[in-house]
Length: 255
Image (cartoon, rainbow, N blue to C red):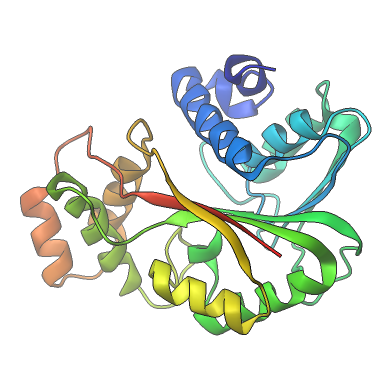
């Protein structure tokens, strides 16, 4: 399927079709860098509303399987909850290749074993701590043969990406929260965590994030919810009303 066809399978498409197509197109590019094989059995940790899940399900084909897990309850998320999004996706043409389990922690719950791939796509900053992420990465080695990972890189490549970074730093001061940013890591720290967890990186590269809307979303959250401090003060002074440029991101595979 093309990005438009996959995006139409998502519940959020009826709310913001252009946004959903953009988000789906980005995840399709991620999956292409990972070279998802036809017929693969995939475990996705941190599946959220299923943006990546839908792309993976399309690529693995009718003989593949994608099991998405997330610690969030089905009622989490807006403007469409993760549960409603999952039900919508499962009712579509890819539904027979997908299983989505919420309130499920791959570190402690039984999610099966013997997967060809374990995927974590832009979910590592949601973990409550870097230690919890590293232990989950170690567990993933027991669950699958290959890791496919993508995340924001908090080192801006351009000056107009700094507001997104400030929003991340402001949210990082929020303490215990169920927000998008809980334990952001640098690329170097993440690579060290992968090594400690027993993974050997095969390939790593930058991915184009310029079309994404995430910077605007994170800035809005930080300005509304983050505690006052230098990061938030500078964010007020530098952020645009809309059209803020996202941070860079990277994608990798490991065995």
